[in-house]
Picture 1 (cartoon, rainbow, N blue to C red):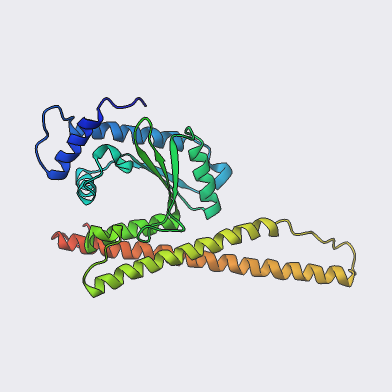
Picture 2: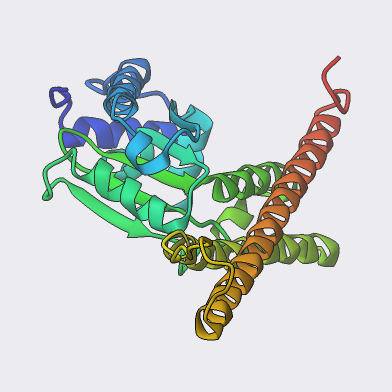
Length: 289
């Protein structure tokens, strides 16, 4: 996609107009035209990612690649929160998201594959998994040419937590997304509880990554011949030890799977509760009829 036609000062003036809720000055580009450009830009990147063959990394597991428009209210909040950041410097004005059921190692591989689509000087990788931002964990790729864009790569659980926390922010205040705790003790405890869920997901995904490596090695376990009615005691003991390891391995796999399902369900239920509360605050019924 070609670089947009607006200069730095033109975009800065548009950002100031959005931030201060004032009429744009003469020579300021139209908001609709600017956002149409960035939405088309995000969709172009989405399509480039979508057409890649992901079966090598993810087998037959489903994945979702989406692009999202940034609303004027979201832009305004961002510009008001940091008045020193002009519109043209907002990284995620064009946003793309890749989400799939995958391990941390597979997430790394997906990030590497997407980064390889662009010139190495055009992409910057930000890993928010080891140092989450208000509980949010993901890997972001930042593009700067021909325009700024952000590609979020999230595991399924990271995505479910993010959606849950976004719903909570609509009720408890958007500031919780930036580390500001609510003043009410109960609301503050709720936010800490949501952060604890994020930490639980991090530990689960860490264990899954270790399990994945074990899974690769356990599949290479030696096969013992049963042609003879009698086995040497040494071989018999070795076979029994390997079988015991395999049984423990399967138990751990089932345990992790149950934990994953439970956390995913909890995130969905909590998100639905917050969405219901938001609807009530807006004077709407708890659920759509």
